Length: 286
Image (tube, rainbow, N blue to C red; front, side, top):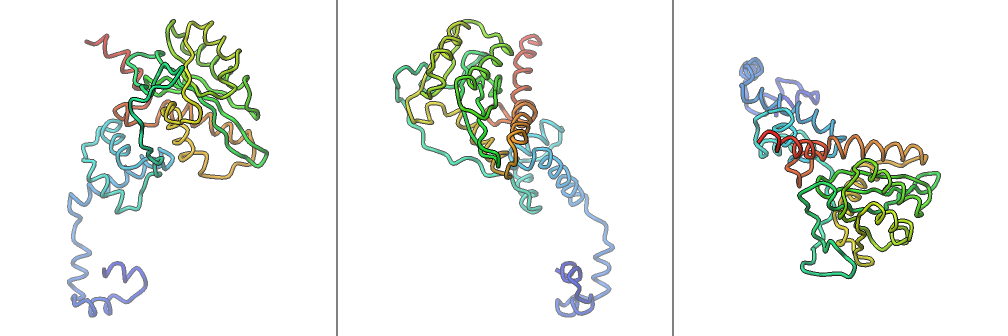
């Protein structure tokens, strides 16, 4: 308390007299060496600030804790991380609003039925389009995600929302992953995805198209969750002047942050790239 008042410009003698503390006792307190536990907390707070800054200010205490323990091999409890972040005024961005999910609902022409978990790469890809305004006009982004690792394996950006947009994203995914036959590409009933060209490209690759019901985001919940995270962590954090500026930021978010750095709770707090790397290395070591 005295430290706070003195920092605000009040005389030390006046503060000590009001609070009933002797002036020599106060100065002895100032000369007292810092306790080891307090030094460790200050050190941890510094690490927490570094991790939070490296996450672009997005991580809450769970992901910060994962980065400290898994990325830096620091032994610390999640409860202490929460307390230190709260005391230092460090907070993650709020997550998306949780929507109650319907269970056991089967939809026509839907090969997924809201069951997105897969145990091998390229068994199920989900895709969708999002849009965001700039001072020059809207920009559209189509992404293709592998539900096995949550990695965005294909994407495209354009100023128009047309079939070419989704074909470019799918083509990038096919070239990057070369999936075997029998995989599923799941989308909504947007005209771009129900077009003959998009369906034909899927079938030529030996994959099967799948569509959720019209107007039901839960039928493509994993893709909607990705868009929601990108909206919170990137798109809504500033006003964008040009399409090029926003396109570059989306590229950086997808390829640098999401795929290679962002820790995902559904992957044991690994990023998609590390999750895929471990899944290929582990069987060889067994």
